[in-house]
Length: 626
Image (cartoon, rainbow, N blue to C red):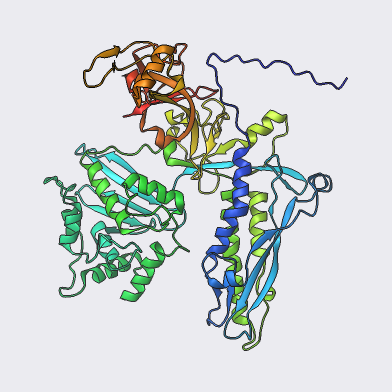
């Protein structure tokens, strides 16, 4: 008999959960689909504006959003159907991949006419199967997501043993480019360590920034004078015993009077960073512009700008799409450091999941593709320079796809994050696809990872399983996503919450059964109380309230069916209590006060605004903002 018998589902949970389990390999599937649509388009957009020969007489255009030629000649990229099925690849030890084609345009002074040509860029990326795996040389592989520190700024503080004061440090970490580390010294001045190399007083760097344009209209640094810099920090650097900006001025060399102080500081910055180079203003400007304001060398990514705007309160000043560093960012970072030094604000919790993000499979492959494209770009420029002068060439003779294919082959063949899929049983296979690792390129090393980074953090609950991690040297560095966790567009892990309402509309048909938290008066002029507070609304009362035209009625806080997903940094704005707090038949809290985290204090239920669900590994309820 092949008839299937649908047995009744059994639920052993003490707390009922109405939310359905999500697609458990959604992280893998959505990330790879995003790579094929947005990620690859962004990569090709990075190499256009066009690749120009060293002499400037030839230009090769790839599909791009900016140049008019890309639209005029309909430059685009597309995938064709895989040559072999998944079953054939597994049986014949082949790679399951889609051929990628791109249309390019070659034009310039040496070309009699613009040449448009369709090029084959290789069988890549290896196509993902519906199970979220890759078939490489006949074996199924899984690319594990990586949990790393997010681009942005992080403030730490160490206590000085001699004085007992907090000495703050800040790290400005881009997705790609030079790191900037700001440190407070014992003599109450602030220095900058640029790209992990040499140090300069922070005021030298601030003056040097005044000599360049950061692309933002309203710049806080225009001249770089003492008065301008002092005015930027006057309201926070107000401790007469520890004047950080004045002491930083004292660390600067003497500048030549009568000259532009911003240009002089730029030269001083260049001397310290490049001591062997001749100090010329033009060279110094090009160096700093290339290091900080060139999108090919410095990129915060959208997530880095999001974190900076969030941390430094720059939403109204810097647009969320601006991926370069700005003068506003540097000024706000120094202000924040001074406030940490003065004890006005606390330091950051580095292990908080709001400061760590997940690099999913699509982003990991995109980074390797970027490396391959950069190598291919260098080969194209070399071939442009060695061709015969005055002769026309075709794009196919300039483009070599080997660097691109080799970078992908290297990633899938030897990367620490590309692994043979566990095939013990379907559950181990699913667990492998939902694994997140803190190891790998750009991540931690198991030899250097301390106890703090391995330990369970309160922000893990509902996001990362606090139990399932391997024993041995990898403990705490490899984990698994919780059942209902998901990864948002910026790579931060979110967990579901249920809204808790404190009032209802007067004409809401669901008002019946709720407990009033206000007196109902009729008419409002006389103030005659019709229904007193703490009265349970019945059908007659609900009809009367609707007739009175009361727009909003305050009721005892109750759980709604509305589900919202919050990341760890967004969750910090709320007071959180346990999911097993007792409820009555109307979804209202039975007790007046409840324990809440992270302080474990008790809060009244009247402050409740939202509530976290309680499926497996989701144990929290969220209250109103602090």
